[in-house]
Image 1: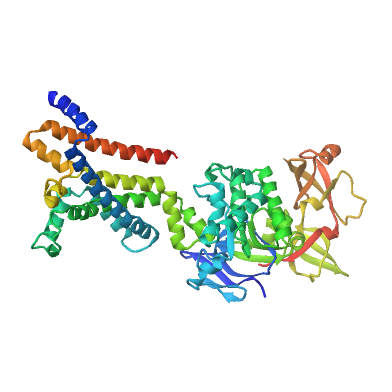
Image 2: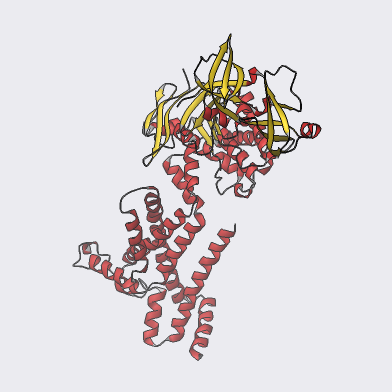
Amino acid sequence: MALLKTVNLGQKYGERYVLKDVNLEVDRGDVFALIGPTGAGKTTLIRLLDLLETPASGRIYIDGVDVTCSGGFRLATRRRMALVQQKPVVFDMSVYENVACGLRWRHEKSEAIRQKVEAALELVAMADYKNRNARTLSGGETQRVAIARALVTQPEVLFLDEPTANLDPVSVSKIEEVLAHIIGQQKTTIVMATHDMSQGQRLAGRIGVLIDGEILQLDSPSEIFTSPKSREVAQFVGVDNILAGVVVAKDNGLVTTEVNGYRLQSISDFGLGEEVYVLIRPEDITLTLSKDIGSARNTFLGRIIKMTPLGPLVRIEVDCGFPLLALITKRSTQELGLTVGGNVYANFKTTAIRTIKRWR
Amino acid sequence: MTELWEGLTRAIQLIISFDPEVMEIAGRSLAISATSCSLAALISLPLGGLIHFSHFPGKRLLISIIQTLFSVPTVLIGLLVFVLFSRAGPIGGLNLMFTPAVMVIGQVILIIPLMLGLILSALRGVDKGVAETAISLGASRLQAGILTLREARYAVLTAVIMGFGRAVSEVGLALMVGGNIKGFTRTLTTAISLETSKGDLELALALGIVLLFIALIVNVALNRFQQR
């Protein structure tokens, strides 16, 4: 039985629906990531699951028990869970007292509190700060205290709402290290919301993509990133080339799709005349100065219209009669002498293309 | 000017020599005001929490009424208590008129709006995330409320001190329902009023200085607590 389950869960603020028909199942020990753009409803979903809000529709089950509106039972249920918020509020007291709060509210004995708090602070590497007022800490340190404060109660489900948003890269990696440790050692069930899709990929075993209040895809991280099932998911997971086309030929699984009058070959099950989107990740496109003699079946001559440096990489927009975005290393750009206005061949394999149904 | 100077000298003499009458009046003032202040705090703290955390129609109106009562004249409260506790009044049978007890009751009624209003604004000043975080970490509504009050502790303490200040310095109520009976209900403010009307300005000034001295000690204690 799933530890956490929702059935057609929905929430609305005023007349506006922020969540629609969310159906989720999270098993004990799972690490589940909710990814989606800002404003997609991730925080609302987490708040509903943590019983901080009452849903407008649908049910929430924990261990098979309906906890949606069960009055006084909510406190007991909430005590089985803990939440780390995006911008955690620490109380105006020492770090130690902040972490001890949850245990005091559960009327634990003082010796047990001392041991648990010290272990939790040790875990997040904040033991040296235990006597500091928590309001004097930096953003990353505050977040680690918030994680310790949630973990110390040994929750069955730990909710993390954007645990590393607005933090510097060093703090992010420290917090991810702590989370990876918790996932590896403590086997805590975790539901985390993040807009950083790579973080979801690094930490989670399963991912739900939430866009405009709806779960559009539930899959393993690799499936989500390589096989997005809709245009919105593809866009969110970084597939920059989403081209509308029609299947015009089919030969033993090798499908030809016409895009803007150009023919692209890919492998898929779609039939003749079907309207599809062709998805190509920008890093799967190679650029050459002469026609590629390698294994890429798709080769198009185009003109470079824009080059945007992204650290060690360069994002290159090529007009091949249809727009293509490629991501190549700065070094390759220099070696090939690529410049805006210059001609270049864009090459990609049939296997680099994902084809999905286009809904009108 | 001479009177002021003589008053100051006499005040110092009275304080240094622990003049029994002055000490007795000061002690009574302190006791009555401290009792009223404690009782008002015991009522205002939970009531403030209840009003702050509840949602009900008319909440804004209630807060406006509370704030309006900040400036209620002490003689008006005195009149109300007089009507209630005088022999012919609805609870006159309790025989509390002209006793320290009725003075305490009057002062409690007088300072509750002030204390309550300031506690409500202290609670409004606390980040809403505090109570919600507490709830998400397993606190009951009561535990979250106590934490919020704790977060607002300095402003709440100021509210209590303001209440004490209003109680210890009021005169109209103490005169009307206390009666300024020597050795029984005479307080610093009623004594000052009496001595001034008798023409003993030095003693009146001395008592005024003692009153200010008490206020000073209370404020110093508050500042020390806030700096901790």
